[in-house]
Length: 326
Image (cartoon, rainbow, N blue to C red; front, side, top):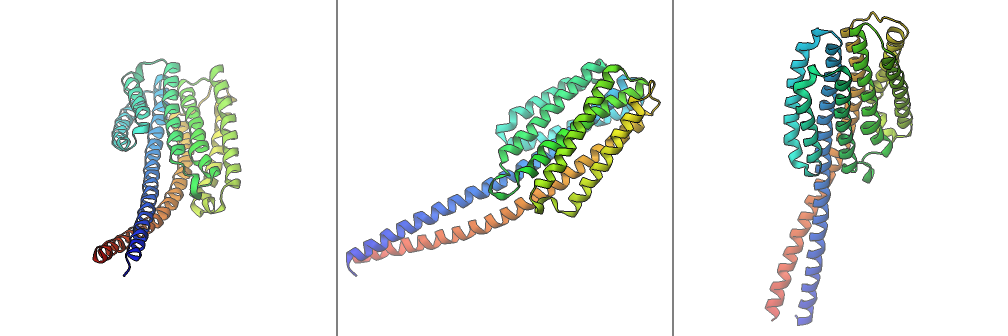
């Protein structure tokens, strides 16, 4: 065989091997990105659980500081649960160094709030809880945006806005209303400042849920057509309507509210649970979409690896051929 033919075979083998390896590397990068997105989804879910606990703590402490001492034992149990949740998150954030400092700030804020929670004024307690909840909300949004789920058709932007922006915002407004309302019920009176705050929160809740419903109308039908997601969405509407009516009738239109603080806390908690049930369903849908993408990426990566092996065999054969000719 002429020497130039062996040279051409070798050149073709080198080009084929290089192209196969670059394709394999690209598909491995894609695989790593999808794994990172799944990890981000796990972290935002854990942060959502932490947010739920901080919101509960705010409401219970509000009741306690307004005179209902029956919440004291529940507060102690909840504080232990928050500590455990933070320990779990600490391990998860070791794989997310870009967000680690934000988590450390949250953990430090809780360590400062925890020992003094039952000794603060009502106003300071509410403010510090809201600041902590707001920091958690911001971190959830940051991680969701960093994971870029709206790219590559995994999730439409409107669905992402519902799941990681509007639902947590609605939940926080309801959580604040629960804390204020439980405090009003425990104190047996509604101050003018409480009326103003509750009125503002009712407006905020209504506007947020309207945006959720509008977003569902704009979202990819395959994402929101899931039957359980639809059922959870309908439950949210019913719960919010009931809670707003409860606040307006039992707290805002009477001079001396005569409502059991535990009962009000439980009613508001039921509404919050419906919000987070919708969030959980959306998270399941997103996870399923990511798992499908991940399975496809794994198949592509395996195929690319096989092509790399074949190209290396071709390269080796070309080298042997050239050596034989020489």
